[in-house]
Amino acid sequence: MKITQETLDSLKYDASGLIPAVVADAETNEVLMVAYMNKDSLADTVRTGKTHFWSRSRQKYWMKGESSGHTQEVKGIYTDCDMDTLVIKVAQKGAACHNGYRSCFYRKLNDAGEFEVVDERIFDPDEVYGKK
Amino acid sequence: MKITQETLDSLKYDASGLIPAVVADAETNEVLMVAYMNKDSLADTVRTGKTHFWSRSRQKYWMKGESSGHTQEVKGIYTDCDMDTLVIKVAQKGAACHNGYRSCFYRKLNDAGEFEVVDERIFDPDEVYGKK
Image 1 (cartoon, each protein chain N blue to C red):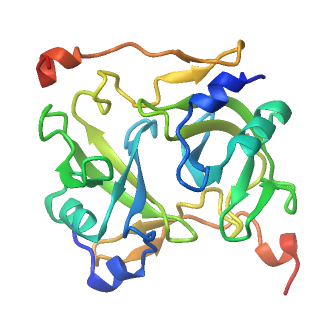
Image 2: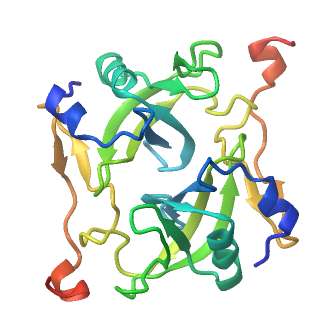
């Protein structure tokens, strides 16, 4: 998989040099997570075939699954009409969410107008990341 | 459909008061577009059952489909572990993309490392929005 420098440069990054990446399951299209990439993490994602991001809260690069082993193998990279957002289709190993759910979007607005957990954990975060 | 004030307030908005919303087809899970909501447009989305956004480029509210008729009927609203992103599952009338494609993500990174159109237009933007 490759990306030219011109293509990297043609995307629109925000004032912090970031572009949002929606990660979706390549088989089911299910949205697994949304995270942010800069040019370097997108280039690393393409080069290695595994998703890499820039963490805004931790101000560092990370490869998805570097702690948990729950890596994402890239199957396709798409951009939108404005070229300011990416969709990355992946084969997800284990779970995308560090809380132990397959998808980070495990809470749904219910009839009472509140978010409610609608999915089941597939791993125990304490076992995967260690207790604090 | 309803959302409590407490739930509205519990979401994390960025410095401009916005939260990204990934709009996905409720049947196929296909990601159709990504746009931004503030508290008011999310409240309007819930109240009317049709997606409303805040346009960062035009600095105004808009209802998806207000010009084109290509509205999005809300089927479910999800949030992620960090509560700083939404997924809105919808029944899309016509096409989500103002360029005439079903999804805004109609370009895919190809083997040459460039984005290439991989989808077909389902409407002619000039006919729907009028020629300039």
